[in-house]
Length: 178
Image (spheres, rainbow, N blue to C red):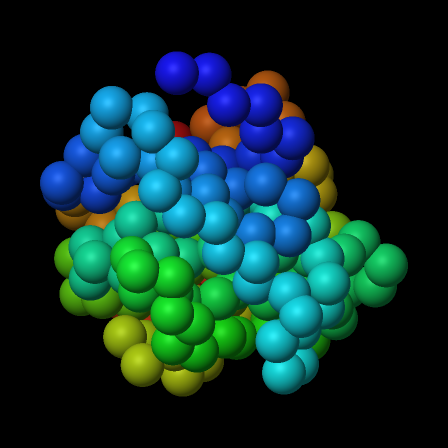
Protein backbone atom coordinates (compact mmCIF):
# COMPACT_ATOMS: atom_id res chain seq x y z
CA UNK A 1 0.00 0.00 0.00
CA UNK A 2 1.40 3.44 -0.94
CA UNK A 3 0.83 6.54 1.16
CA UNK A 4 2.32 9.89 0.16
CA UNK A 5 4.23 11.37 3.09
CA UNK A 6 5.48 14.91 2.68
CA UNK A 7 8.11 15.08 5.39
CA UNK A 8 10.90 13.04 6.91
CA UNK A 9 11.46 10.28 9.42
CA UNK A 10 10.39 6.68 9.56
CA UNK A 11 10.93 3.87 12.05
CA UNK A 12 9.54 0.42 12.87
CA UNK A 13 8.76 -0.99 16.33
CA UNK A 14 9.32 -4.53 17.58
CA UNK A 15 5.81 -5.54 16.46
CA UNK A 16 6.40 -4.34 12.90
CA UNK A 17 4.29 -1.18 13.19
CA UNK A 18 5.60 1.68 11.07
CA UNK A 19 5.75 5.29 12.27
CA UNK A 20 6.27 8.04 9.71
CA UNK A 21 6.64 11.78 10.18
CA UNK A 22 4.47 14.13 8.14
CA UNK A 23 4.03 17.89 8.28
CA UNK A 24 3.04 18.40 11.93
CA UNK A 25 2.42 14.89 13.11
CA UNK A 26 2.98 11.17 12.93
CA UNK A 27 1.19 8.47 10.97
CA UNK A 28 1.12 4.88 12.21
CA UNK A 29 0.80 1.92 9.85
CA UNK A 30 0.53 -1.76 10.70
CA UNK A 31 3.07 -4.28 9.40
CA UNK A 32 0.99 -4.69 6.21
CA UNK A 33 1.30 -0.97 5.48
CA UNK A 34 -2.33 -0.18 6.32
CA UNK A 35 -2.92 3.22 7.92
CA UNK A 36 -3.89 2.78 11.59
CA UNK A 37 -3.74 6.24 13.16
CA UNK A 38 -2.67 9.85 12.68
CA UNK A 39 -1.50 12.03 15.55
CA UNK A 40 -1.16 15.77 15.16
CA UNK A 41 1.39 16.77 17.78
CA UNK A 42 0.49 20.44 17.24
CA UNK A 43 -1.05 22.32 18.71
CA UNK A 44 -0.48 21.19 22.25
CA UNK A 45 0.46 23.33 25.23
CA UNK A 46 3.86 24.77 24.43
CA UNK A 47 3.69 23.48 20.86
CA UNK A 48 5.69 25.16 18.14
CA UNK A 49 3.45 24.31 15.18
CA UNK A 50 6.63 23.17 13.53
CA UNK A 51 7.44 20.56 10.96
CA UNK A 52 8.40 17.02 11.85
CA UNK A 53 12.00 16.29 10.91
CA UNK A 54 12.41 12.82 12.32
CA UNK A 55 10.74 10.01 14.27
CA UNK A 56 12.43 7.20 16.19
CA UNK A 57 11.38 4.29 18.32
CA UNK A 58 14.14 4.21 20.91
CA UNK A 59 15.44 1.53 23.29
CA UNK A 60 12.89 2.50 25.95
CA UNK A 61 9.95 1.74 23.62
CA UNK A 62 8.86 5.36 23.25
CA UNK A 63 8.47 7.25 20.00
CA UNK A 64 10.59 10.42 19.80
CA UNK A 65 9.47 13.12 17.38
CA UNK A 66 11.87 15.94 16.42
CA UNK A 67 10.13 19.09 15.19
CA UNK A 68 11.09 22.66 14.49
CA UNK A 69 9.40 25.59 12.82
CA UNK A 70 12.72 26.92 11.49
CA UNK A 71 12.08 30.50 12.56
CA UNK A 72 14.57 30.71 15.41
CA UNK A 73 16.98 28.39 17.14
CA UNK A 74 14.80 28.35 20.26
CA UNK A 75 11.58 26.96 18.81
CA UNK A 76 12.52 23.33 18.32
CA UNK A 77 11.49 20.46 20.51
CA UNK A 78 11.57 16.70 20.84
CA UNK A 79 8.36 15.05 21.97
CA UNK A 80 8.26 11.66 23.72
CA UNK A 81 5.09 9.76 22.81
CA UNK A 82 3.69 6.34 23.56
CA UNK A 83 3.19 4.07 20.56
CA UNK A 84 -0.55 4.66 20.98
CA UNK A 85 -0.08 8.38 20.32
CA UNK A 86 -0.18 9.83 23.82
CA UNK A 87 2.24 12.70 24.39
CA UNK A 88 4.28 11.91 27.50
CA UNK A 89 6.58 14.92 27.64
CA UNK A 90 8.56 17.34 25.50
CA UNK A 91 11.92 19.06 25.71
CA UNK A 92 12.77 22.29 23.94
CA UNK A 93 16.01 23.28 22.30
CA UNK A 94 16.09 26.81 23.71
CA UNK A 95 19.29 26.34 25.68
CA UNK A 96 20.76 23.24 24.14
CA UNK A 97 20.27 21.82 20.65
CA UNK A 98 18.26 24.63 18.98
CA UNK A 99 16.26 23.18 16.12
CA UNK A 100 16.42 19.37 16.35
CA UNK A 101 17.26 17.27 13.32
CA UNK A 102 17.75 13.80 14.78
CA UNK A 103 18.01 11.87 18.02
CA UNK A 104 19.49 8.61 19.30
CA UNK A 105 19.48 6.79 22.61
CA UNK A 106 22.39 4.96 24.18
CA UNK A 107 22.24 1.72 26.17
CA UNK A 108 22.00 3.72 29.43
CA UNK A 109 18.78 5.42 28.28
CA UNK A 110 20.40 8.80 27.61
CA UNK A 111 18.91 10.70 24.69
CA UNK A 112 21.25 12.57 22.33
CA UNK A 113 19.56 15.28 20.23
CA UNK A 114 21.42 16.71 17.26
CA UNK A 115 20.69 20.34 16.48
CA UNK A 116 20.33 21.71 12.99
CA UNK A 117 21.36 25.37 13.14
CA UNK A 118 23.12 25.45 16.50
CA UNK A 119 25.61 22.68 15.65
CA UNK A 120 25.20 21.28 19.16
CA UNK A 121 24.14 18.00 20.71
CA UNK A 122 21.92 18.05 23.79
CA UNK A 123 22.27 15.08 26.14
CA UNK A 124 19.37 14.09 28.41
CA UNK A 125 18.89 11.39 31.02
CA UNK A 126 16.05 8.86 30.84
CA UNK A 127 13.69 11.39 32.49
CA UNK A 128 14.66 13.97 29.82
CA UNK A 129 16.51 16.15 32.31
CA UNK A 130 19.40 17.90 30.60
CA UNK A 131 22.81 16.48 31.45
CA UNK A 132 25.00 18.47 29.08
CA UNK A 133 25.34 20.26 25.79
CA UNK A 134 28.32 19.33 23.67
CA UNK A 135 29.64 21.19 20.69
CA UNK A 136 31.61 18.82 18.51
CA UNK A 137 33.39 20.41 15.57
CA UNK A 138 30.75 20.25 12.85
CA UNK A 139 29.97 22.27 9.75
CA UNK A 140 26.36 22.86 10.87
CA UNK A 141 24.91 20.68 8.16
CA UNK A 142 24.29 17.71 10.38
CA UNK A 143 21.80 15.21 9.07
CA UNK A 144 21.88 12.38 11.59
CA UNK A 145 23.20 10.98 14.84
CA UNK A 146 23.73 7.42 16.08
CA UNK A 147 25.26 5.83 19.15
CA UNK A 148 27.56 2.83 18.69
CA UNK A 149 27.46 -0.26 20.87
CA UNK A 150 30.57 1.05 22.67
CA UNK A 151 28.92 4.44 23.27
CA UNK A 152 30.76 6.24 20.47
CA UNK A 153 28.80 9.12 18.95
CA UNK A 154 28.46 9.10 15.16
CA UNK A 155 27.30 12.28 13.43
CA UNK A 156 26.49 12.62 9.74
CA UNK A 157 28.04 15.98 8.88
CA UNK A 158 27.27 16.89 5.28
CA UNK A 159 29.26 14.32 3.27
CA UNK A 160 31.24 12.83 6.19
CA UNK A 161 30.50 10.52 9.08
CA UNK A 162 32.32 11.76 12.16
CA UNK A 163 33.01 9.50 15.12
CA UNK A 164 33.45 10.96 18.60
CA UNK A 165 34.55 9.27 21.81
CA UNK A 166 31.74 8.10 24.12
CA UNK A 167 30.25 10.81 26.33
CA UNK A 168 31.09 10.14 29.97
CA UNK A 169 30.55 13.43 31.82
CA UNK A 170 29.90 17.13 31.35
CA UNK A 171 33.64 17.62 30.93
CA UNK A 172 33.59 15.75 27.59
CA UNK A 173 35.79 17.64 25.16
CA UNK A 174 34.28 16.35 21.93
CA UNK A 175 37.47 14.93 20.49
CA UNK A 176 37.10 13.08 17.24
CA UNK A 177 38.49 9.55 17.34
CA UNK A 178 38.44 8.83 13.62
